[in-house]
Image (cartoon, rainbow, N blue to C red; front, top):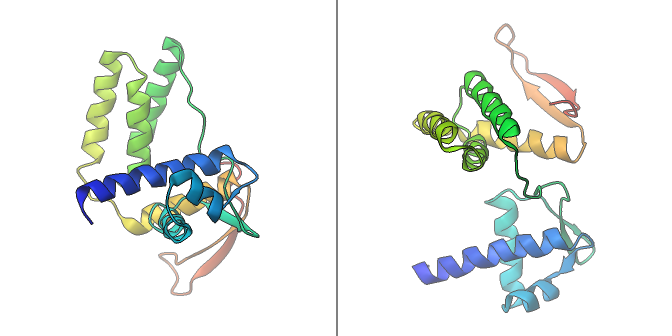
Length: 178
């Protein structure tokens, strides 16, 4: 794939996500194809890419595709005091995490853009420090599944093996109170 083609595809993927977010009743493949100026088969491949590679929660109801309503949050702005509170909360996040999570880094980078320069620089230093460790794909996958279960208010089944036991244990988790 050439650079121009990948840029065009990236723009189209963003547009599809935007169209689905703006149409809570969903859109058909044909409607998305018309909006993006491509064929329906291209839209089907793009939807698979959004679901599998980008892990965007897209559902199909009949012939209409929808995106989970709570997946993308609207933009907000903060007062100085709210920004300071967010800075302090982000410092707590860095003390608690031991894995490089690109979602946490991305969210904190966005928060840093809303902070006054002095606070933003300190937060960006912390973001760079945690980014030095390579991300663990399984940890990120689990984080994403918990986030989707939490935002859609669904229960999830987890299976784990404790240090004291060879037998895996299974729990039904209701992550409503992260």
